[in-house]
Length: 486
Image 1 (tube, rainbow, N blue to C red):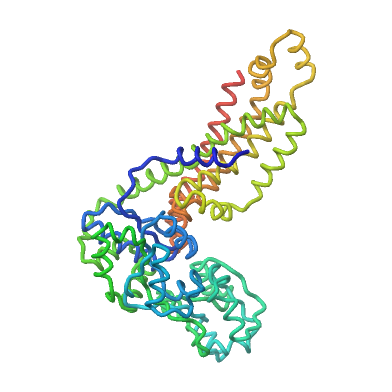
Image 2 (cartoon, helix red, strand yellow):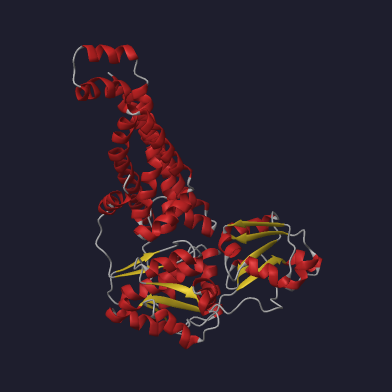
């Protein structure tokens, strides 16, 4: 199978939308989404058509998206930039770092006014009972259970280096989502988590941020990274960067994080309030907004599932027919599609980003690959399952091979083929929720936001429609099978 024609087809099949003038990205945690929303709202207030691709995942995804032009700017931290994204720039001063970024076509704003460093946190009550105030104190408690964010587990400035610097002998260390870690430490399932020092949950859950007594962590000044091409061509972007320089202090950022995560306000409301923009919303607008959101997410989800399934049918059905006619080829095709099925969905999405960028296209490509196995396998099984006597009777009638295939073999194999397509569709509906991690939208968006904000209502806003769509799809295929079998 040649990859290039398929990728070209996928690119052509992606939903057609007018491109915004500027695209703002943000990472999958509240502070980044709030900062992304502030930038987006301010640019829109100047009449610029701006899209906020929110909660796109971790630093590596945003950095790659900025470099390949999928986004034009996003909030970042100086420590992450020099320790993780550009490790060759660890000893650079500001001037050298700016020059290094410029060589990549990227610019860096002046600091926004606060730093948001890493720390490790323990429940205050437990910390006082065990006498833990500094990171060095953890050495005396190797049985404490660590729950660290997945990104921190593997960063150059994360757990591996910290463990070495402090000679920690922790025996139970597991990676998990940063927001879920707060719930786990609250419930007592873990004892130590990594913190962002502007997290609102530190005070809310009464955690003690341990002192970095060996000065392991660098400064993490909040900045905006942007594409220099966009900067040169967009006066509104230049005005945005000037206006935000030094404007947000740590207390303000903590208050905005708390407004979203503790008080339950939206990032858009908090951003509008910070910018002093009109935030008046009619009381009766809430239900309307929910319905518009659901409709938009449904369209996005249907696009992801429908386009990927259509492509899988165009490729998988002929491949299955060909494999059924050639047993040796059948083994190779089924083996190849089985291997594709074993690749974890998140890894598949990350693999496709360098080829297709972020958004719907890599998500459609991943879903296409996952759809192939059930369609190809059931097509082969359906055709192989036709009784030999029927085949011989059709051949005895002197019917051409193509006619036998279209009028006898495929109709007889149809129930099995439809079962494969139905399975592929249902798998796609569930897997498509992960597309939200790379900006593909769909029902995964409210699910991820709900997990981040510990908001069950938001999680259900994505999970219930996805489940309903899967059940409805399964039922539709049953009706279709009964209708075609008459």
